[in-house]
Length: 236
Image (cartoon, rainbow, N blue to C red; front, side, top):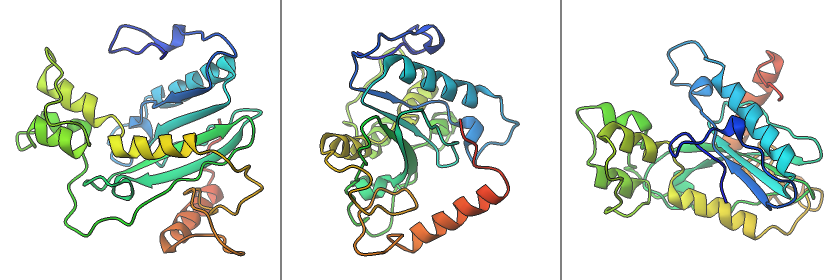
């Protein structure tokens, strides 16, 4: 089952799931308020929809939840759930496009999410598939766009305008990235205190007393500390 959404006529604000039925809650709330590409003042919709995700998760009381958004999204910590932030690039999942997405994982039973990644292929990489591409004159064909999102080239959305089709596909998670996260959920086996996980939140297993997996992880930790010093790490 899924919750309602605006495309199919529902509104998450009027959705009240029954408790104890769902193993997990998966959501991808609006990212515009948190995106680095934003050129206007925040609307408040981003925080409002994060609160709705939190409300639905508390009501459903699942074993786990996953929230997908951009890396600048505030922490969404829900009582009684172990919380973990994971940044993942589509290239690390076998996609042809360089696109960074952010996931927040919560486990009622303290399981940690271990994400298996591959070494990104050599350049050139495809440009990211953004929702706004459908409004541009110079754009990939819709078939190419879908292929770069790991969908079949013959994927169709009959009756939709070009701009809406590109937006619907571009707002999604690349399919190979979604499968990578799904495998990590399927293979849950370690509680967070049983393993050494990179401190930046990438979900990589570490050996010995290491705190970070790579130079990129150390830079991410530095950015997190910098945001914390200026009060940008909002907790919901």
